[in-house]
Length: 91
Image (cartoon, rainbow, N blue to C red):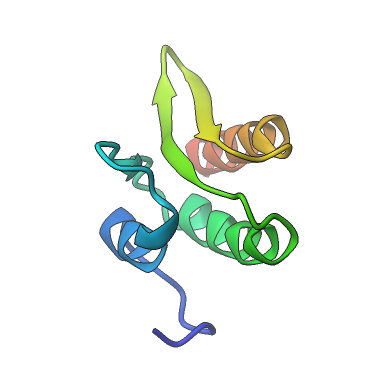
């Protein structure tokens, strides 16, 4: 996959990062292009910095974002994803 290409779907995202997705989990489930592309950039950096990186789920639950991953950046990602989702609601 061309690393400069913007992804449009969660399927594309989860396919790209399938080697980091834990078994029996569905991965990214937020169908928003801005979120998908934000996480694509973040995962590229995380994979280089954290050899133990993996993820299970990234979803909304009760109007909150939940990131389940082996990373110290989970809370940062949740905050940024919430900002992106709120930005899209107001446009």
